[in-house]
Figure (tube, rainbow, N blue to C red):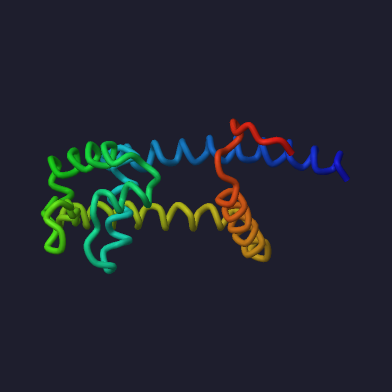
Length: 159
């Protein structure tokens, strides 16, 4: 049993490394061609995702993305300069900066989403139709398990 877990653990690690590499290549090619950084892309996508939920502050985004407030502020500054985001004072709390997409920001995010939909559909076409649900379910389980484990591989945990 322990030997099997060790073997499966090694296989999972290798697959995660390969998936990470493939994802990084995708992120560089997709986002780079849109003229923004990966951090800027994540910020824009999160602002759009939260659009119907009321005001989205920089501190809300920092918490959602797991980033420092200063990092979110710096990334947002670049997007404001590019006229992709608007920064306004909150109507509820004047100490909070609220971020919203400009028309140009919405157009860019729609373009990114359209390209990503086409790309992910091409990926799914490479998988036999009868195995697609299993792949998606397995990835969902993997993401949930990874979110449960805090700290990553450098934690001084003892098994």
